Image (cartoon, rainbow, N blue to C red; front, side, top):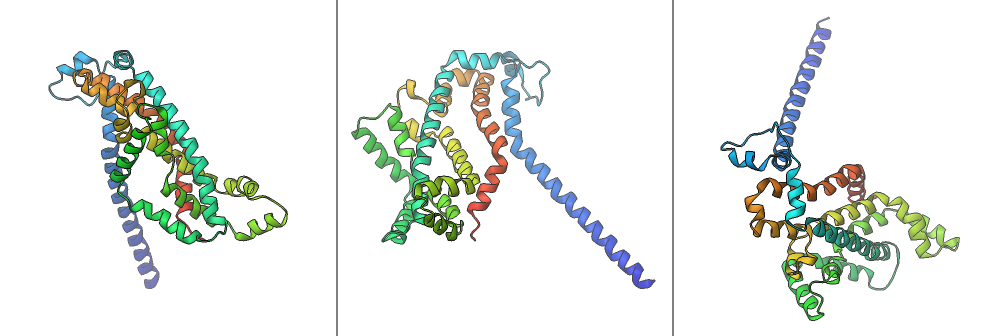
Length: 291
């Protein structure tokens, strides 16, 4: 009876410690979530505040009783935001598509094909990741300028097509597929290209989706290269467009409209992540697991 009582005390104590741990963990996670999400809330809140009411606030208010969509109208009429948006969509879609065309065959070659010097070539290929991005930008700028591709979509897109990291990530994922499948397919007379599209890509679909979404986010948020290679507003992306809005005085004067423009630009990426968040997590997990 004594032993049973002691066991119950130990079990009760363990439950109390477990409950206390959960309370602490969830409290810290809640605080962290508030810290992370607050800037997005403030951005959205400011975007629906009336211009006059916003300027009349000596102490910022954390809510508004009279939301308005006039700021969104101003964001599209005062500056060519729709044009910037269109340019960004073209740049993102074409760059991502070309990246997949380059990355998938390259990863397949390194993961499955046997050719002389493959390991050396792959090692040298990975060493490119050690080169500072600033040096690459300078080289690309000189090349694009010499080719007279400044202020063109070709000049924007071509330097962003290849990614060593995405090739490495996909190569590691391809390498997890058993060699027996490849040898069996070759015995059946399947070509390498058919094996890639019929076997490897369906198996590695989460990783393909992951690198696609990561590339879309990278292109959508691209700032330094578009800012460097374009000085014609007809080729501005949304990141450059927002900077232009801020610099031309409109953004500094009308903060609610500026926030409305930022909301419009941010929504596509947020929706994309929410739709494919499970695939992203699955793809990253598969890419980082060997065997």
